[in-house]
Image (cartoon, rainbow, N blue to C red):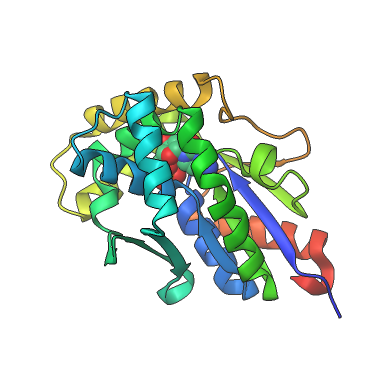
Length: 235
Ligand code: DC
């Protein structure tokens, strides 16, 4: 029997992680684990409970409560995506607003929030391990799955990432300007890289992929080639 595999993909906002990870999962027949969606769901739960994102004790209590009640559920979704449910409802769209993006970045700096979400991520990967998991986020290769079979750190220049986020948000009807989007990307980078716990950082054994001058199709091909090279008959 061949062993199942974990591919860890980390990197900053707008580098193309979500679409590349999803395509990679589809091509390999693996399950996608989008860990950012969990922090986003906690930010949404805070917003609904009128708890400030920067309130460490309040946000941690919300995260613990939501997990203890089994109110935050993640499942494999359509087209190699991942479904996120909060209190029984699909919150896939509600967690993709700019407000929740910044909120997710803020709540993710609280140790209590990170601790509450740890088992959820590892359990999901175990369940998805029939064949393999592509897990994407900020601390997958460094904290969540330090023994991942393949680690990819996907990055790009701030300009390129802001452009990508901007077109993604515009498609969803957002009125945010490119400049405002760039400011959001820079602010999130600063928070995600600067926090004391599990900061965004490239694991020493992660392969660096720079998507500044590549379209996402080419990035996907590059990641697929890395997976085939590293995982052999498991890819
Ligand atoms: O990947 P994303 O944009 O959906 O993530 C939203 C925020 O969640 C991000 O700004 C930081 C946080 N996050 C994290 O701290 N650790 C992860 N593994 C994934 C996301």
